[in-house]
Image 1 (tube, rainbow, N blue to C red):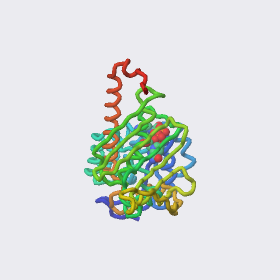
Image 2 (cartoon, protein in one colour):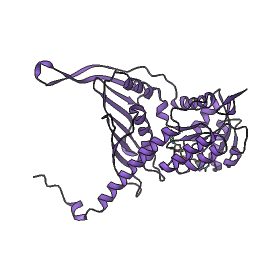
Image 3 (tube, protein in one colour):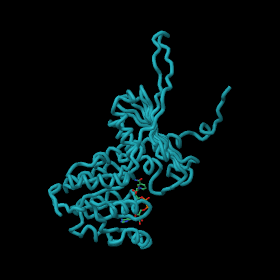
Image 4 (cartoon, rainbow, N blue to C red):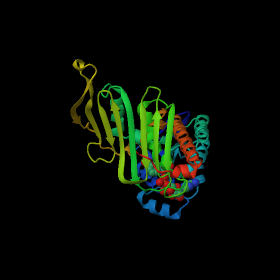
Length: 356
Ligand SMILES: NC(=O)c1ccc[n+]([C@@H]2O[C@H](COP(=O)([O-])OP(=O)(O)OC[C@H]3O[C@@H](n4cnc5c(N)ncnc54)[C@H](O)[C@@H]3O)[C@@H](O)[C@H]2O)c1
């Protein structure tokens, strides 16, 4: 069956190729293989081992080490990139220039300049570009967004995120880019503004020059503040977001098996009899029901629907670019703080605190 879409004909089911079969790519391949509106036609990775590992899980898909096999297949509608971050921009531009719709894993690119190049390539080609901001498709985050947009939490005061773990260490990106891409995308999704003030501090312990732990602070024009704690060198495994509103507070905890979202009827109420004194309120705590659907499946379906209906995906190229812009500014702040520390005289840096 053929349908018109985005100025070009697209097949239904859509014919998909997945590139990069390391840790994450096989999850994307599994979903596009099992969804009724897509057909996984190609899997690509230069590593023989990776292809051999994935082939039995996606029967019927062609395996190749050459991206050109996918780009030259006129029947292929879309290509999904799950390759290392430094390759994203260059590969995405090749995919779009070949006239294929493109899904790129997060972050879209390693610089604003590269991200802009990809966005322009999508516009020029008239093809769908979507970035894998997975959490924007999580039903728990969707419910949190509903709460934040309604009056249920009141005015949002501040938001903080914790993304902590022990591993997975990366050599080609630091904890900010590897872990922070998720949190920045959720933050921008919730606040729907761009921050005007950003600071970031981080430390490298395991590998010189690659930050294992990063603390970020952001301020938005509406007055909302945000803090992100990102680390792959931590005893705790946490993936948590807390939103503090004037009426209520809510926490999204992706590690929780049940009760991923909790709403706390907590805050300060003015006691009119006590001349401006405030008394704290601690009411009900409840967990809204969250549909038990794999967020990655929702994300993959969203990509297919965006192509078929010729509608911009939620995490389109502009959204990906916004996230890269924030990450790049935070990276500048990290580097600025490192330079400031390095230029301090050693004696001053080592001077003990005099607490008397
Ligand atoms: N959404 C999520 O929750 C999530 C989780 C993990 C990783 N990711 C993203 O997925 C991407 C891949 O991460 P990973 O952890 O799977 O990395 P990985 O290093 O485990 O795998 C990358 C694979 O890409 C292959 N590759 C490298 N260059 C290639 C090229 N030019 N053409 C084809 N294949 C190539 C490598 O051989 C390797 O098998 C990254 O962008 C990462 O940010 C997303």
